[in-house]
Length: 315
Length: 315
Image 1 (cartoon, rainbow over the protein chains, first blue to last red):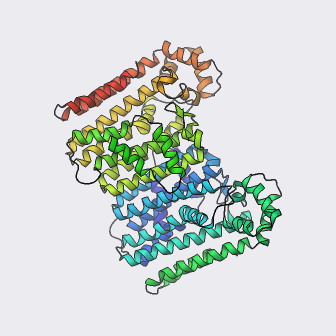
Image 2: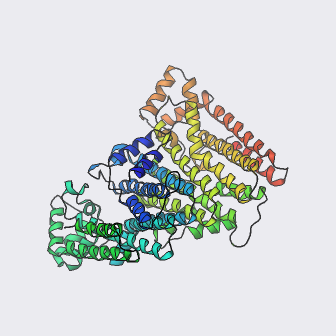
Image 3: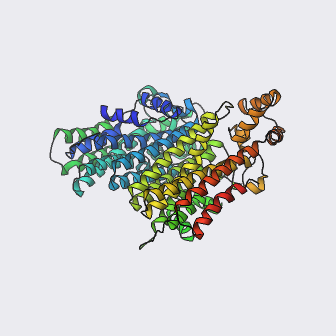
């Protein structure tokens, strides 16, 4: 992971000063580096042996993090977020323009890294994931403020915006180790289910956690009128008064200061958090089970535990 | 070119409805399709013979247009432009969010097309060009409102934002035809010089043309405080009163309704348009001369004429 962090910092460099400046802001902000970690762990689970030079899985882990960072930069512009991981977001510090353009740079850089790696298979996986992410984000925008969004469309959104890159990050690890199709698919399924669980918990926490712990502004989803499972569940189970409330705050975007508290109250009363976490647990178990094709090992158990730990964030 | 247009429309498709909707808006808006045309012409000049299926140069021409369209979408967001090619810009119709995200989608889709093509050499050329474009745009942002911008930094900006993709579009044509290094370099130089000429003329027209003819809002560069050669030339040759004017309108962004006319007047008086077009002609001739390694042919003469025609737009 240290090698991966070095690769990330080294490859964010550019003669255009604003790019490394903004990159330094992002690197300093830290973040869990969960996606590159998945690439490293998957490659190791598949017994990948590095040759000379920077190992392929380290380069590709950096590449995955660049794609992720590019989407974060653009998301924060689209959502007009002021906080990211508890610090001022890049758009709040450097402006929307810089965030759009440096996002584009990081995306291009990720494809330069893939080209250096030289595997068409890896390139197919990561370019497909990139297109799916963008589709997921557009779909999320199209469902915003729309309480009639069906459950499966919500699941499409979180698959696109989160699970697709988790899946690709894991699959790429199997590809560099040149493992059979069954193992590649198993890691793809592991990542996909883990990503679904991760996003569901994130969506639950937006109506449950306190700001310090979460490192983002609680209630962001609420203020933006994002359609997430806690809201769909509370709206679906609500009486007429409750539904009128949801229509006003989500569909008409007419909110006052006390509305977030009331929304959290209604969600708690209608079991919206528990319903969301229940789903997340289902995906987390599916993630762990997908690793069953690999022989038992400390790493396999650790990766399974990560899936279950992801869900325990929601308690 | 008809085959290329078909490929562009077909590959902009997505199950997420907003993507083909916004794509249709862009396709309907037309545009010169200059960059894909360069790929097609370069491949043909190199004697490329298509095999079965969609010819490689058609697919890659579509790919080049996707990269260009993605940057246009993001540019219009960054510049807050309301017009593009004489029609309402995508961000004016669909909003900034959609433009950012559909731009990301088109960029990802271009890499999917490259992956299908399967040439690592093409991928290196186009991913390098994409990174250079983003760097050029960031550099342009960093020089905005700064009258002390040196000439060579201005040239770096227009190389990044325009010439790099022109160069890559041409070079890719030589690569698919598997031509020797000298021809690849000649086409790369042709595109690079053509792109420089093209952008210089564009920068001149922003202070000279009337809006209908140009298909964009005249004075956009002025209102945004962009540093272009007409302004640098007029500022450099201006007396103290003129320099005070430029500092107010460009550096302090303090403009009233009569300032654009006065700016155009000062630029005309100080020869700013002529100086810019002079440079453009220099690049246009270098572009034509770069084709000298190819035997004389109707197509070679046509490509040379395109370079000279580009400059004649400025008269």
